Image (cartoon, rainbow, N blue to C red; front, side, top):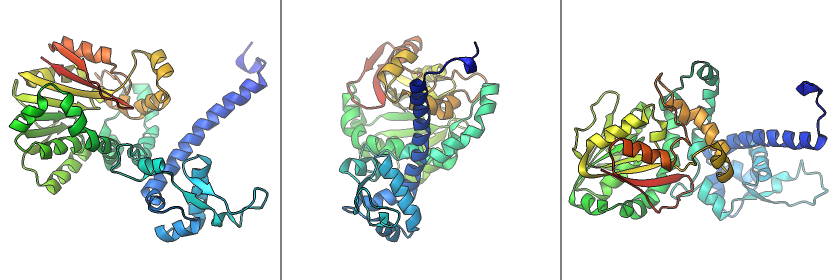
Length: 373
């Protein structure tokens, strides 16, 4: 009996259809979140105790009718709350303009406060650039070859920057670095530091400002990210930082670096094992490596059962992380959830490292490791 001839369970069919269209609803609402961020609508709402669509339109200098429909999506998605000025049975087409829209304190933190570590608009910032890659994916599926991060354009780099900078600004100096054995003391005294996969330079500039006696090099292959890093370096006025493009510049000499950091980038690399061997080569005998990467289980079953965001992460992997890790013919293709602790430790030990320690740092997405020779 073919699939089309099988007797369908009506209830199971309804539930499956509901699940499928719930995914579409999420994708469409993600687009609306992007619009709200880009047009500053969340920031306008965050600065008040509630506004009507007319008041939002006036504050944003945008069309009220478009604002009202956007607000309706946000209320239906339980992102924005609404105080209605009419009864449940009243026709609402002409009275919705009186509805007051509000953001909860938690919503303000995630949607509107770029200083809060929970701020989450970075991935939505790069949403159009990420989804634009859908047109390239059929060929990637056929050829096996993906695309690097610069394929996402300048907004892709800015989106990554906005994704990770708030948490890093809040916790890198005071929470993360002190968990490393003796690193803070060395940074204060003055050591050489390399941040591999530095992106727009947020972390390396933050450390360089805090520890002026140390010298810092940020290395990346993304021209868009390095352009952002160069702009931010000029604005900072710091003289103990430089940025290098790994495609055009040589990496530091063997045994010349005291401290190396990699933030959320090893799983994106075409040759992660080679990079770990290079890190081992660059480090001095008493040097250390801070590896920060996506928290992952050892297999699909573990990720699906324990990670409520697994579907998102596997999808982003196809659109971005694994695509980058397969952007040349010899890419290993680890992907977003491709570097669990067990594999990271194996790679480190195979490269010559003898010490691998998981740090006691709580983060919703990332795991933190101290690795030494």
